[in-house]
Image 1 (cartoon, helix red, strand yellow):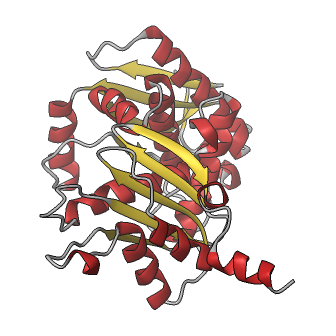
Image 2 (cartoon, rainbow, N blue to C red):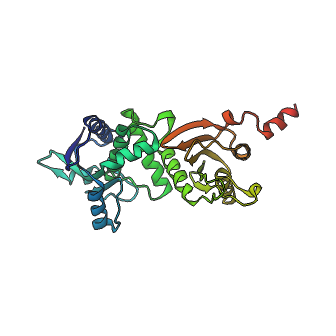
Image 3 (cartoon, one colour):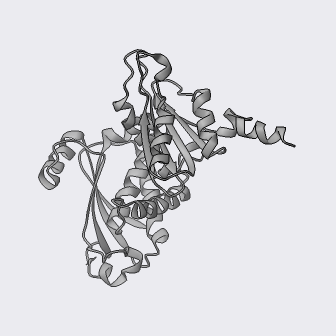
Amino acid sequence: MMRIDWTGDYEIDPGIRKKMQEAADCCPAAEGIDVPVAISVRLCDDNAISEINAEFRGISRSTDVLSFPTVEYPAGRTAGQCGKLLQQEYDDELNACFLGDIIIAVPHIYSQAAEYGHSPEREAAYLLVHGICHLMGYDHMEEGDKAKMRRMEEKVLSEVSATREAGITEVDRELVRAAVKAMENSYSPYSGFPVGAAIRGTDGRVFTGCNIENVSFGLTNCAERTAVFKAVSEGTRSFDAIAIAASQTPWPCGACRQVLAEFAPSIRILLCWDGQVIEKNLSELLPFSIELETKESKK
């Protein structure tokens, strides 16, 4: 069980806080920590977390969660492998080893839940688990470290039934964010319909793209193909998922479906719009690609 000292003057729904506590309680066991541990969690508004960002990070804006660990872990090691270091943070009053402080901006819980199409309980649980992972020595600056951290987050969230709907994982969540971000670079003066895409290679690399229009409409390139062509030009030719984001359901066109089928005929497709995310498989959207028809005709 994780002992939490809740602070802050921002009220939050009891159901959300209960789900956060449940998620926190699963973290020590998932990490393999065999001593009592405690953390401090402050729930605040955007202004408060902006001030903290400005003071400690030199960033004058609001973010969703901040973590301040008490333990400095050796490179490549996390809390479950550092029992002696944890014992150095033992607090007699808490009767537990103190891991550090977490600050969560409550408005982000609701806005991000709406953006990604899931419940505030799930988003709050994710933000707290993300913060606790940092307190346990995880990071996401490098791709390998990010994947390790995401696996731990998923492991905990699955224990409290707080994973994303339709099998969408935390790694998928990052892909959705990348697609939404890619929309900002769209050049779509003729359709007025910006689209962003982010495709993930089986090697873990992510490539983004946006739709790029032309006054000669036939020269327009869709976001999906922009992302695929970038990936292939950089040496990645095997893919497991692509996220496509727009203001309404961004079904890929026939050309994009065929291009995807060239490299990943069973790729998972995450369609993102208006805070919703649904998953389809390319085989559902393109049951008979040109390549498959050609093979069939040779029988």
